[in-house]
Length: 374
View 1 (cartoon, rainbow, N blue to C red):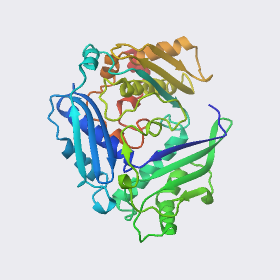
View 2: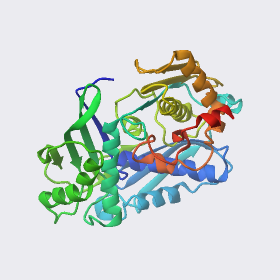
View 3: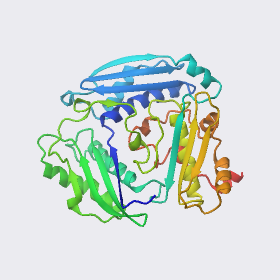
View 4: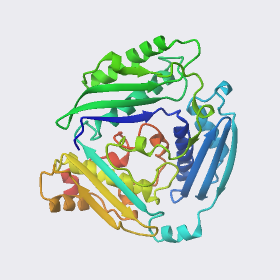
């Protein structure tokens, strides 16, 4: 893909939509910790002093949804009622069991939903992610780390970063702009905030990636101030940040969100499988850039579409790449779940900084050629 510049954004773990993703995935993890065969489809909504948890759960686990929500909200830094949202806010729960019509398809190892999913990988970064979203995630992770560690003690939960990277002949060459929005205590000036973020977060990250930049192209809190974070200022809903969760708009995304869904929902597991295939194809040197597309219908055991696009960067013929993908992973619903070992409580960690390009998730593992032969 050839751009003169490209912009991606990320949000901090305390962003209202991410609060919802974290609660929904905390419910999923709690169910999987007790019953790996749990069926979960949970949506969360937050606003000023209020949290609603709704959806369907079929599980042997007896879940305390209110306790899960309060614990998650507390862990995200919402412990002060002054924020207008905290672990003391009202929580409403409306959860029932999975629809029998959907269950019928899932019971026979079919997909729990229809839809299309995309996975992508390229050589712009060491973890095979596009640089703009990689940088944006690094900045929001840095903001959260500075708050949680007390390095910048006056920061409050929530925040955003938007990064524009300049390209030349298809390669990233510099930073065109960095826009950040970060809430903080009232006594702190914008000048002090900008200085501390620059020294603690921004400069170390940009130097790590060896990008040219100008300080005047870095904007912090463009409206001047931001004091009240989170749901009291802007409501949040599960699954509203699918571009942040994937490739920052640099590559296509599917039709469904991830958080709060068990892995029979191919919106989630299919997207993980597509990323796994794309990343391994690029890591094996078969192409410099790769997109894998999958599609399923409810009850489908196998994808109705599986396509691999390398954008003219392939180092071998398409049949060789297709054969390699087949050896990497069986893309039937059960094949994905078993091949990537997805029925376990690992999903709370995906709720911030994207689902891809991060160490520790099974869909990010790179297989060696020896593993495939053996």
